[in-house]
Length: 351
Ligand SMILES: Cc1ncc(COP(=O)(O)O)c(/C=C/C(=O)C(=O)O)c1O
Image (cartoon, rainbow, N blue to C red; front, side):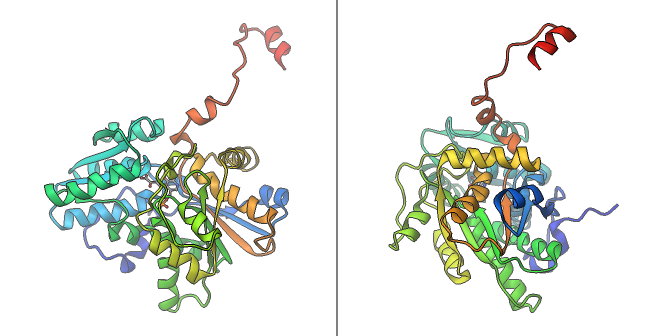
């Protein structure tokens, strides 16, 4: 049977070639249990962890790598906190071209590192954070003629904007709010672009509020927004949510405009709130997401507690990456009981 992929929207995607792993077409459904638990009226999740390499990055990479092929490129490069590198490696493998990924040494989640390796990328750990690695990649793409596929590359956002198209297609209406984690700030910018394109094409009459959530220790946009001041980067971003451990978001201007134009907001949440939300999503709704993804829910809970949002409005949480990407964050915080003898008696003792 035919798979529903983001190429359903090919008339909105500015590329002819197609390197695809059947990305997109991810589940969107109601979180009935959390809705009740949190006293919300309309709470949905769009689970981007269901993409081929386990994150929304596949939407940007299918278009970005297709463009690379169209341009006759045979080498692509990115800096990454992990998911971008995993996705670039997979799509480069499919396209039969070489990929180079620069990752913050010791700060990339296990699953993402395994993916970049096994898909065949040249993995280059960098003694520094994502922001420092990105600077090297920009210089390398200029000097060495390697095609750069971080989200500064507009073709990435042309793929990621299809999240907006699918939300409208799957709900049948435009939600009042879309909440998602913000790191390099490409995704919030892309989804806003997608809704505006639907609006300008006359498919929809209203636009959602865009709500961007950052980790407190890596929240240059949320800090500037709440303190009502100019944006300025953070030197030393730190958070357990390594995917969004970014101090100088490359797309901050686009993200700022998206939140302003949409009447939305930025907020930040602590690592504890993120880990609690991760557990809640898994134990109440059976959805295992990596920490950065859980910041959407952590943000919703915080904004509701602060009465900064209307509980009766409709909310779509974007969960951006699968929980299996970062198993250590669960295992390290769990005391596994000692093994029992293989007998019913022994089992009854631990019941
Ligand atoms: C699971 C997950 N959730 C949210 C984000 C933030 O999205 P942007 O605000 O568009 O950056 C990322 C980003 C990851 C990288 O930036 C990378 O992989 O280099 C992510 O992996």
